[in-house]
Image (cartoon, rainbow, N blue to C red; front, side, top):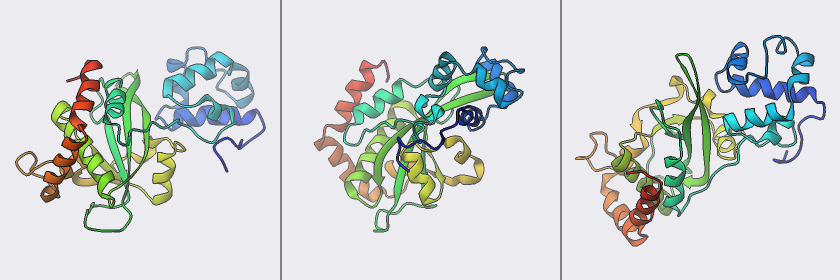
Length: 260
């Protein structure tokens, strides 16, 4: 099935996706009116009453709230998100990062992976997917988050891809003191997240977390992190960053956006 091939033809499918979108963002059906005041509890009673409430304006507002493509809600596309790309362009990564609403978001960048431990000496495929997280609403004590997918094809087994990631992680840690936790998922899930076909919230649960390891640990020297890994490669990473003017380009963008 392609990104533009419709999954359903009945308008009832729109109500199903509308409700699923809230569920996938940890919003109960009864909480929907608090986020979308145009929808009442009475209209949420069944699909017929809800369908009449899904005006063009409501669908637009919901798509904007969660940062998803309205075409997915309407059933004309299977792609939920339009991914962002920054491979070889650290300035794009930090432009996206600096535009996030990071209020009370403890980990604004996370990484999805297949393995408990990365190893640059292992030739086996080791894909990484980065996802940015921001706050889109508060429901009392509960913070509702939405996602920006970094769709680049990062491969830890390929030196240039790995150096790019390590460079990003070094700058993110040094400039913003941000940690990037890692979550294990299966291969199909990982690639579907990267392509914008899945909402990440379901896979960001504690049971999926790689314990005692964050992605920036692979980009910091032992004196910078007690959990430092692969530090013997870091001089080459720093040389790569220097040759590509990695920090200068990212720093210009970071400062122009009001960052560190």
